[in-house]
Image 1 (cartoon, rainbow, N blue to C red):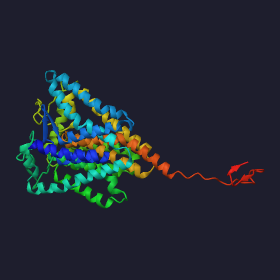
Image 2: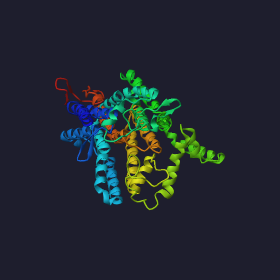
Image 3: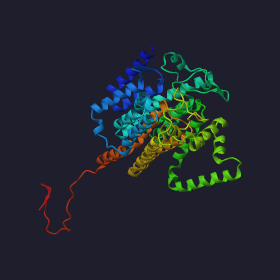
Image 4: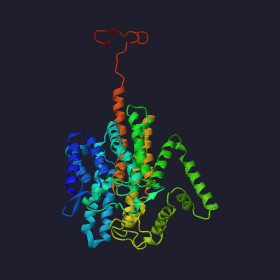
Length: 465
C-alpha cells in the first residue's frame, strides 16, 4: 500500500513536470517534498525511491533533453556542489572499506536529495519572472501546511501517523519525546521527521519570500497572509532553533541600509561577548544559549558537542572522520554527546576535514555569488531582492550550528544554494531585457544650417549633401 501511495503521488508530480513550465515542475517538486513523508518509498534492489526522488529525476531528464544545461553559465559553485558530495564518498569509502556498497547506496540517495534538486533549480530558473513564480509557488504549497500545524499543537494528534504502517522506516514515533508538551502545547511536525526540521523549513523560506510581501505588487494582498501562515507553522514547531533563525534573518534584512557599517557591528559583538565573559562566572556562549532556548540543558548539549568534537572526539579521525555515524539507525558514535545536532560537526564527524573543507568552500562560493549579484544590481528593488537571499543563507549558516540538516530541510538548503548560484545570471538577463525595452527609438534630427554653413538638407531622402 505504501508503494502505491508513493507511485500515485509521484505520478501526479511527474504530470506537472511534463505538461507545465520548468518552474511549474520545480514547484510540484517542492510540494511533494513538503506534503509527503520521506519514509514512504518504493524499494528497487534495496534502494529506496521516495516520491521526490522520482519527480526530481524526471525533471532533470526533461531539462537535459531540452538542452537547459546549455543555456546557463556555469560557475565555480556549480562544480563545488558535486565535488563536495564526491569528497563525502571518498572519505566514507576510505574509513569503511569493508562496506563500500553501503556507502555508495547511502550517498547515491543523498545525491537525489541534494545535488539533483540543486541543478534542477539552476536549470529551471533563468529569469526574474521564473524566480518570482517559484517564490509564489513556495508560498502556495507551504502556507496551508503551516496553517494546519496548530491542529497537532493543540491536540497532540498527527494525521500522518496513519501512514507510518506503510513506511519503509519510522522517521518519527508518536510516543517519542516529540509528542511531549512544551508550555502546555504539543510540538508539530506533520510530514517532517522532527519538529525542529519542520520549523527550520519555514525559517528558511519566510525570509526568502520577502520580496513578494514587502514590495508594492499585485501579489502582496495574498503573499503577506501566506507568509503569516508559514510563520504560524514555524511557531507550532515550538523549537527555539527555528525561532532564532527567523529573528536572525529578519534582523539581517532590516540592517540592509546599514550594511556599510558591518565592521562596527562585528566590533560591537566582540565587545559585548568580552563584557559578558568578564562579568559572568560562565563562558559567554553558555550565557547566550541559556537565555535564548526553551530547554537550557539541550542548549548546553550543543555546546558540549562542539567542545568534544574539537578536543578528544576527533582524535585519530581528523582526516576522514568516523564514517556514517549519527542517529536514525546509523553506526553509533562513541562520544558522550552522540546526537549530532550541529551540521558542521556532523560533516566533520562523518567525513573529517576531507569533507568539511569542501562543504565550507561551497558556502563561501555561495556568498561570493551573492556579492556578485549585489554588484550587478542597478536599482534598489533588485538589491533588496538579493539581500533577502543573503539574509536567508546567513541565517541558515547560523542555524545549522545547532541543527543537523536531514530530510526535507537538507534538500531545500541546497535549493537555497542554487538561488545564490543563479541570482547573478538572473539579474544580468533582467537588466539586458530592461535596456532593450527602455532603449529610446532612434530619430532623425534636422541639421542646424547656421552651425554648418553650406549644408543642404534634402527632406525627401533624409540625407545630407
